Amino acid sequence: MAESGAGDSSSSATVNATVSATVRGPRAVLRLMRPGDWLKNVFVLIPIIFYLAGQGQGISSEEIWREVLAVAMAFISFCAASSGFYAVNDALDHEEDRTHPVKRRRPVASGAITPRAAFGIGFVLVAGALALAATVNVPLLVVLSLYALLQVFYNLKLKRVPFIDVAAIALGFCLRAVAGAVAIPVSISIWLLLCVFFLTLYLGFIKRLCDLASVDNARAAGMVVPWKPRAGYSSRDELNWLLSLSGVMTLLMYLMYALSDHARRLFGDRAVGFALLSPFVIVVIHRFYRRANYGQSDSPLEIITQDRTVLVAVLLFIGGTVATLFVPQVSEFLRTLLYF
Image 1 (cartoon, rainbow, N blue to C red):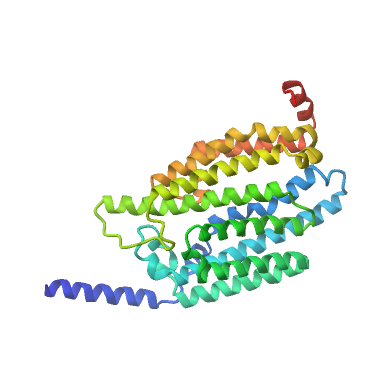
Image 2: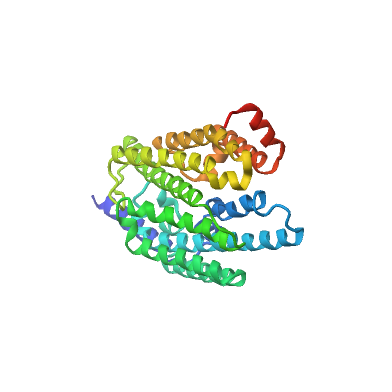
């Protein structure tokens, strides 16, 4: 018993010494910022891609570069802002994260960065993001400010309310798409916004399922894991129902946008090509669920690089989208192939 007590005391002293360190170098700061998750900000780029393929056809190269620069700055702003709030979130949840088999490796939970330092880094990143957005235009600053306000409420309360926690995250992604539109500025389709909302709602529940599965795997391996879900998701049945609902709505909104009058006005007969790409959407939706159910990584970047099926489906979807948007011969091919 004495040996055990001495070991516990030594271990506690080591942990305290580790946590007291401010920052263990730039690699820890980079991990705190989660650059792999910057891929999520790709939603900022969607409006300009569709604009250049539709309403923006025929504009001068000077205008194109000006708008591309504006959207690029909006993208960087959201990368900085989201990284800032990742740092704040990790600082707030570091004690809870230490009880999770995967999250305990995060910089703050592991002791590589103190909570105080993480708060400071987060504040600098968010302030820098707002300053950069202000150089583009006022509407972008307003949208980014709304995103920041949403993140504040999320960290203070919303992340502990079932369903509302994930809905708040999905709303944040909708604000990303809106930011890309106001940076140009152009209008954005309601169908596109709904598609973004339900897709990211689905991905949010995927993350919750992955958390539960990884804990179940650790306990099955004999580990003692006291971690509990923040918002009370303790049943896979509940998450499976939510995933089924959001997954079906994602595909439905995608198809409704592809077949909408709005898409037909912008892209003509080529718009039908989006509907033909829906099998790739289903493949990706299924693979995300399959990996989460086994407790594997829920990071989009890691899934794309580790899962060849997802990588191939994503590349084919991107290739098909580019062809549908920018290859004029697609219209003639689709009219020959299909009756619509």
